[in-house]
Image (cartoon, rainbow, N blue to C red; front, side, top):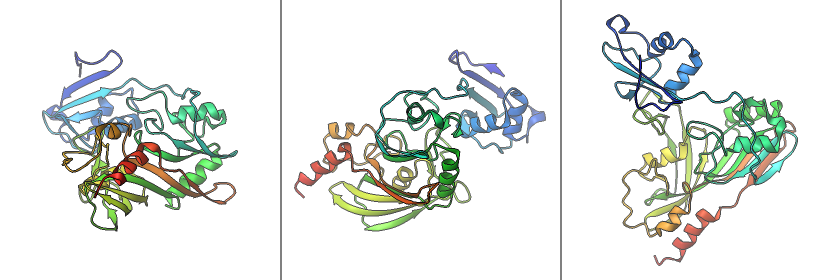
Length: 327
């Protein structure tokens, strides 16, 4: 393998063609031989994150390599073992010795990841409650589920190991209710419905998810109900039965109704009849998606908790504008 001339000093960029003696070898096994300093878990993570390309395309760990295929690997610099706390103000909705529920603003990343290592909710929560260190992963203390950077609303964190185990079990059993409010492009004709389509990594993008082909991806179920229709957009409520990455955004986009402000899944939308001033859309600072209700059983006491976050001004302002417009 050779180091690419365009690689940043902190990033290793390696490429090499597949030799005849290596044809038929699994991609992850081939990488393990070439990169003996990396663990199998690290290699799998690089592949899933899109840092490994075969002939310029993403591939699965089980991909059987062919003669002369070119494998390209970009190894980002390793993250620190522990997350450093950052004293960032939090909008706390509920807190006790075991759980912390926060109303996350749009623009804040839930936990460190590719391209964002500071200013995260996890770092802010760790500064607020230092005992969360060691609860869950070292880089994601207390995090049991996540909200996208451009999404606002309610998120629950675990402050103790018992709470972490209890909350993750509830999420796995789908006993947590998560209700979202959003504005989508186009007129959704059905008053309600269920989107049941599997979701997986987009084979052509490192940052996108997509509705997966039959037999691939993980099952994803979103229930929706239309609240108001306007010329060019629809205001609706969504409830998650599963919690896949970008689930609501991917599901609605697959119907031809991407969320307002979604640059990742917006595609080529006919915005001719969307009568929303560009400055209002820009003020979203993300997508028109808000986690408005969270219902779960307290992981220690068992008490059923229902928490609600009002629609933020960034979305309410757009609705107010639409309601003032003549039909």
